[in-house]
View (cartoon, one colour):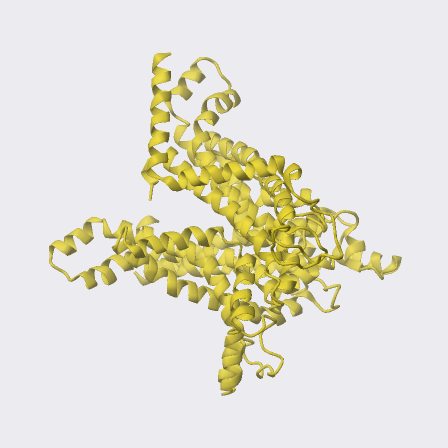
Amino acid sequence: MTRISDAMQKKIKHFRYIMVQNPVTIFAFSLFGLIVFLAVFGPWITPYDPLATNATNTLKPPNWDHLFGTDHLGRDVFSRVIAATRLDLGIAVSAVALSFFIGSALGCSAGFWGGWTDRIVGRFSDTIMAFPLFVLAMGIVAAMGNTVANIIYATAIINLPFYARVARAETSIRRNAGYVFSARLCGSSDIRILATQVFPNILPPMMVQISLNMGWAILNAAGLSFIGLGVRPPDAEWGIMVAEGANYIISGEWWLAIFPGAALMLAVFCFNLLGDGLRDLVDPLRRT
Amino acid sequence: MHSSKLIQVGRRLAQALPSVFGVIVISFILTRALPGDPAVYFAGDMADKESIEQVRQALGLDRSWIEQFLIYMSNLANGDWGVSLSTGRPVTEELLARLPASLELTLIGLTLAVAIAVPLGVLAATRPDSWVDHICRLLVTAGVSLPTFFTGLFLVYIFYYLLGWAPSPLGRLDILYLSPPQVTGLYTVDSLIAGDRETFVASLAQLILPATTLALFALAPIARMTRASMLGALSSDFIRTARANGLSGRVILSTYAFRNAALPVLTTLGMVFSFLLGANVLVEKVFSWPGIGSFAIEALVASDYAAVQGFVLAMALLFVCVNLTIDVILTITDPRVALDD
């Protein structure tokens, strides 16, 4: 018991060391907190209804009543940017969760059993990786139908290979570890060993993969809705807001596109920084 | 020596076959995954029962999956990729007509990115923790976080609306100019061939903003990889030996370190190209660029499935070819590849 708490304390110490060493990571963690807060409480804290139009107050530049100005239908851009957080984050989190679970199941079995399982899973992920991924996502959404759910599936599918590869690599180096042998001696089945011994041990590198991947998933989903897939107007979503604002940028109404675009950028930036920070924490050797 | 290289190149070519097959299988699944009856979709809105039945037989939808797949393969091989519903012309024709516009944009973007990222990465690796290194790090982090469509719009706002330096972001050539006589389909090259300086400058001016947008996006992975592999090469034993033998810094950097560091960078270029093919779609929409990306978006909006899947397949095959070319170059230039096999 004392040894466990010792190890725990060491981990906390290491965590604090990384944090103090790298103030950027602290910034990323606080930004992450803000994003999650907005995603959860967003609809209650917007100053205006994000869908309410106002024909007498269209295309107003940012002012004290409307911090980010109003769009071509008189909707408050600030409220829409905040309200969009939930949808954008929701799409990315569901997609990443899906590819995490399916990808780790595939990767773990490939790394653990090897042989044909490995060959089939490897071939499968190679085939997905043979496509330009954003283009494949477009094709998948076109084939399955233009809905938000299909945006999630498409993003999940194109991210699958990354998780499968990490899980496979991490599993195959632990396949012959002592604790796997002793679990087998105790009579555990392969599935049980995978679930209770191997999987918890590969979680840290998988978490790094998740946070590095999350930013990309957000970008991807926003890109798809920018070209008119998935989210339908009048729903607030960063990608579609930039697309709507794009028509006004040539005539100088910059606030329609720049604010949602900046929000998108900040979110992605936050997850990338977070990923780098987590990697420093988990894998000190790869620090740059 | 020579023949062993040839055998290796042949082996690489053979290794590409399974990925081409996989790509075709996925593309087949995508064309058949349409909700409802694919024959109704491919026949179009105006089709009556008879023509739907015709399409069903032409696609072989009344037969088994294996037979359907074989028909699909032979159609692809014969260049029959279906007919675009929105334009009524064969998909291959549509794609080929628009490919030069996209290639011109992508290649100039990629060249620009390499021209900036490689020296930047090398400088950052030779001067760790200097201001160059910090700029490199900033660009790398910003580059992967910036949505391409947002960067594009931002550049349009600054350089077109505020400063007025760039021409209006609509297409490949201002309406004042006629497109040059077609030879390669790349406007910059064609106008040079025709000896038309004015058109060349105009088409280059249209290219600058979209190509910069793509380059900003592609910069990050290239610079990151260059920096990392340069750092790796510089800390290796042979560099230490070279230094100990008194070779000049320039020789060490260019002949010994960079040559070794260039190989992983070349491999990264394949991945970057794949990202660029996706980013291209977004950039083409922002700048109303009449390439295959815009075509695919129009097709998506119009539920023109044959066109969309043709686009996906074409991009995947292009990507396989690019990767193959890079692999072959690596096989020919890198003597260590022979040792691996």
